[in-house]
Image (cartoon, rainbow, N blue to C red; front, side):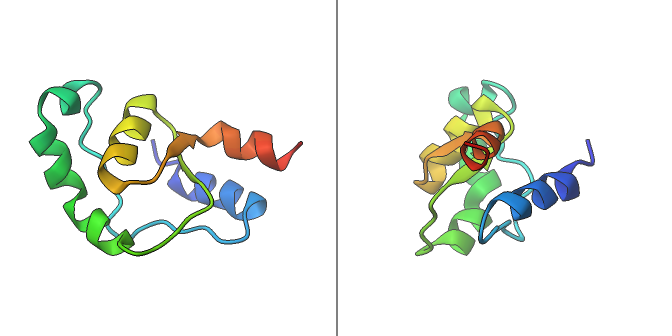
Length: 91
């Protein structure tokens, strides 16, 4: 939808450090298809897994629940809805 820059801008206003992996494009979930074909997800996230290896985060956020589940499983980081970042920052 072309909203990546807007989302990063919001995150930068709410977080101390924002990391967007160079290889981040699509998680490969394709709705629930990634659950049926996990090899698609593994292939889609292969570079991102390597890029983020060894890094530790206080939070990780996504805009879609299937992406959150897929990214959490494959990257080993618990992803949450993006709006929860906004909610936390405005408490």
